[in-house]
Amino acid sequence: MEDKPFKEPVLALNRIYTRTGDGGDTSLVGGQRVPKDAPRLACYGTVDELNSFVGAAAVSARDCGLGELTEILERIQHELFNLGSILATDPADIGPQQPRITEAEVRQLETEMDRMNDVLPPLRSFVLPGGTRLNAELHICRTICRRAERAVVALLRSEAVPSINIHYLNRLSDAFFVYSRWANLQLGAAEVLWQPNKASSAGVK
Image (tube, rainbow, N blue to C red; front, side, top):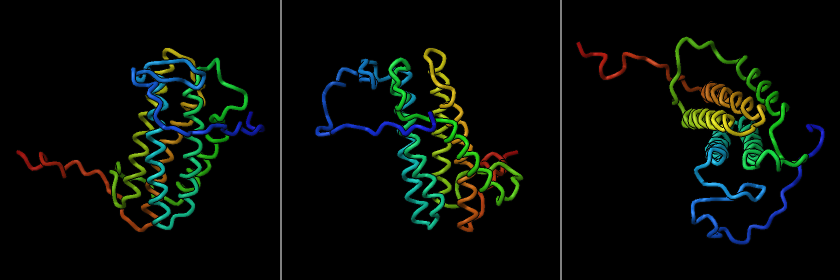
């Protein structure tokens, strides 16, 4: 599968609204009508939400002059759309050249994480989002990615889901964490460490 190119999309979006979803249902790729709150829609809807925030982080990375991270995030956007394509398709309707997630995507994330993590100082505490706007945006991506992973795991209880999709989301959430730390390092910003006694109750006897 990894050696064959994915099928390019063939579509013409001439009109955005169709009124077909006014009754609270929508179509999967294969044409089946399903409720808009169905578990499968929760999966690819959350992946779509994640993709939007990754796009925002990519713009921030470019504005900060972090070209390497910009390219990685822009690639991930395409991978997330491929993931959404599979999640929006009933397993029986998946075609051999339909865009999807493969082991190659997972390996690439691991390679990039290892390379970036090699230059990071060891963690001595949990970190909070912050230090730079880009860091905070990447943490938003991380948490939405975790939610997408939970949605896919929930879907797996009732429908078939290729396990590679869960592997990818799990690895991607880890990658966002590494990217966030790497971004602060590159931008010369200190990490925000968790300090329990900064809470309002810490001074209460």
